[in-house]
Image 1 (cartoon, rainbow over the protein chains, first blue to last red):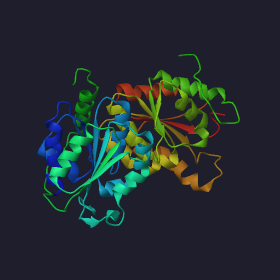
Image 2 (cartoon, each protein chain N blue to C red):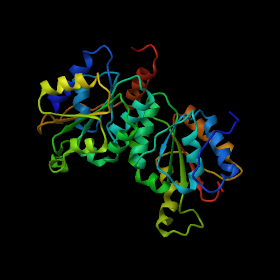
Image 3 (cartoon, chains in turn yellow, orange):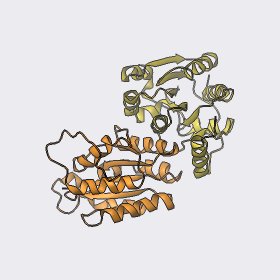
Image 4 (cartoon, chains in turn orange, cyan):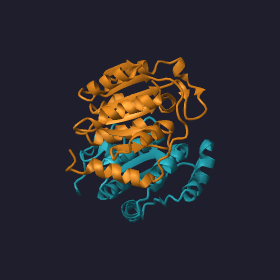
Length: 193
Length: 178
């Protein structure tokens, strides 16, 4: 399973649901892969501010406890904002799912190695206090674990181990203010199921 | 609205009146979410924000994280304030430019202005000198607070946020809130 298969599996899992989760995707190829596969109003592609996807998801999850929120993080991004694990575990929003796509690399740069080769980031989440965590290595387990965690109280953490590689010439989301407005309208619209 | 909110300070002294004026001016903007990293100069303001039942308080581990949390709150329909020192503001400029400005997410900042004339701690000298230069360079409106202009400049910052969709920074030199 590479980045592409992991993201397509997640989207297929979200789209089939009656109540779709709101998704914040991390910088670089994670957001571009998501945008390229399906562009949805419930997706917020965080193209800059590396590391902050889980923090945006936290602010959102606390403010909208009735909505499910998913942060799609990368290992280098999480290492850049490790304090977020402590903050999320401290406030412990039940509606937040933090998924880590871990290729142990700065995959959107030149695949330089990250320290997730030596530190187990799922164990970091457990130590921080996430009550529900899992490790998955293939699409089938990713799909079933995400489906299960979307029904359970969190904050939960899915450590998805992925392989390096994939397309690099993916399109970029360009109209960022429109993406934010569309996402916000979708989120605060009371008529939205 | 005019009733002073309950607060349980573990602080020895009573907040000066300007703390209440600043807090009430901020509340008048509809602020209902607060995050940030503490600064001693803002201790009473932080305590007032943290103990107000109408404000959700979510402190962060670092300033850029607070900006992410505030952005998420805004996307969920909240009106956030972020408190920090200017040292933390300079540490998180990319979060302001590539998240708040790039996506047009407006938030209110309350920033202690260390390195202001009269500063004695040398590590703040250069930060104090370049804070407004950097805010000007990224087109973020800023307002220096003094004892006479609190209600006026908080109102102006509120207009930046609500009618121009821009984040705005209140700069607090040490001593103003005494």
